[in-house]
Amino acid sequence: MPTRQPGCPTRGATPAATSTCFPTYVWWVVVRQTPLVCVLHVDRMLDLSAVAALVGVTRKSHQSLRLAHRSELVPLFGFPAGGLGPWGLRSHETRVVMDEELLQLDGGGVLVGAGVVDVHLAVPPQCIVDACGATVGYIHESLGPE
Image (cartoon, rainbow, N blue to C red; front, side):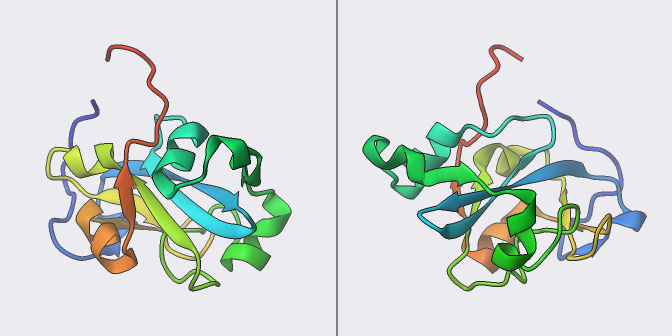
């Protein structure tokens, strides 16, 4: 489990340039043509089966859950790669799913895209849940004992 780095905010969002926090990786997923944003620690791999189970996609329709293509990012989400975060998304139907592990980090914030390529915000993970109505669950691949 990563440890908290100094400088993480404890309330609200701040420009990432002034803070050092746990970096996250945003995966762009499409479920039955509906965009889905998945937020997890940068050192984790997304488990599409776990995402499918969390959002209620049955095994039979698993093929309807896929990673979005880079060319789909702006039309579906409103932001290019490197700038996509969990809010300000193009469609109000876009769901946000966050890995539960982020909520268990030692009081630190997480870095997420701020809508501009290579600009990030440091945000307490609970803010993502509260502001976006994010669904929370374990969505990273298990890599064995850590």
